[in-house]
Image (cartoon, rainbow, N blue to C red; front, side):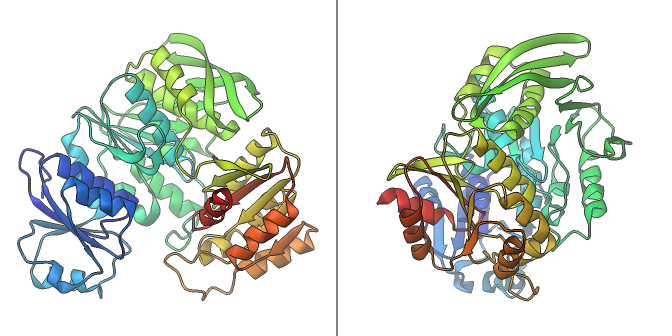
Length: 461
C-alpha cells in the first residue's frame, strides 16, 4: 500500500480526536484527501478537524463505515471487539495501524527527521521544529504537544522536511522510514510491553538500523554501552553530551533567575570546528542536552547559526512541559508532564533554579504497571520537593490488578520521612493548596493524566 499525495483517497480514522491521529488527519485534509472518523466525544481537536473539512462521528457505531473508504487507520488502543473494527473487517477494507500509516506518510518527504528516546521527545522535536521554522525551511511537523509558537501540534509545510516523534511503545517506531534519527536516551519504561532494559535496547538498536546509508544517527554519548546500539548501522552517527569526546558539547553552563539555561556550544563536523553561545527559553540542564541534539541536526542540514540561536531563545517548549499556568495568591503554578522518575528528577532539579520559597508537588502516577516497576525510584525522585501531595493513579489503558497503587507509594515515602499526604479528590487538593501554600511558594502539578485540571482550576479562580 502507498500513501501518495498525488493520488488522494478517502481515509477513515478510528480515534480521530487523539493528538497524533488528529495531526495526521489534518495533513491529509490539506493534501486534498477525503477524511472521516470517529471519537468518543467532541474536543477542540475534533472541532478543528470539522472546520478543516473532516466528517467526525461521536461514539463508535457500525453505521459510520459505509464501504466507500479506501483505508481505515486505527490506534493500538483499538481492540478487536470495537464495533467499527468489526465492521471494517466485514467490509474487507484495507487497514493500517497509526504507526504503519505514519511510516507510509513520511515517504512523501525528502528528509524525515525522527526524534526518539524514553524522555524528551516532544521538547526536542519542538526545538527542531522551531529552528526550521525560524530558518524559513517550511517544515511539515507533527509532535505530541501543542507548540506555543503556532498554537497547535501540526503544521503542513513543503515536501522537504518532516519532523516527528518516534515512540518506542509497542515498537511503533520500527514502522518508520527516517532519514535522520535522534536517540535521546534509553531507559526502562513501558514494562507492560517490554520485558526489561535489554529488550528496550534491542528495539532502539533495530530503530537505528532502519536508517539508510546516506542518513544520520544523532545519539546521546552518555547512553551506556553505546557501541552496542550503533554496531552494524549503515550510516554515520554523531554523539552529543557534556564532554569534549562528543561531536557537540556544552560548557560555561549557567541559569538565569527563571532557570533558563545558557551555555557555549562547541561543534566539530568533519573537522570543521565552531563555537557559539546559546540561551534557552526552557528550563533545566536536561533541556541543554536536548538542545545539543537539535543543534547537531540543524547544523548537519546547513541551518545557519543565527536561526538556531534565535529559535532556541524564543522557544518556550510545548504545552505541559514545565509550563507556567499563572500566579494565584502569590503562588506560582507550573504544570509538567513528567511521569517517569528520571523526568521527575529533571523537572524538580530545574525547579531548584526557579525562584520560590517552598516547592509543592501534586503528583498523579500514570499507569499501575509503571507505578509498580519504579516504586522506589518515584519515592526518591519526589523527595526533592518540600511537600508532595499524591492522588490516585491515572489508569489510562489499565485496570487495578497489579497489586500496586498510590497507597504503596505513600507508605514508602512516609517510611523515608518525606513530607507527603494523599488526597483523592481534585477539589480537595485545590482547597489544600490554597490553605497551605503561601506567597512565594511554587506549586507543580505533575503527571501524564488529568492532573493538569488542578492547575487550570486554580488559575481560573
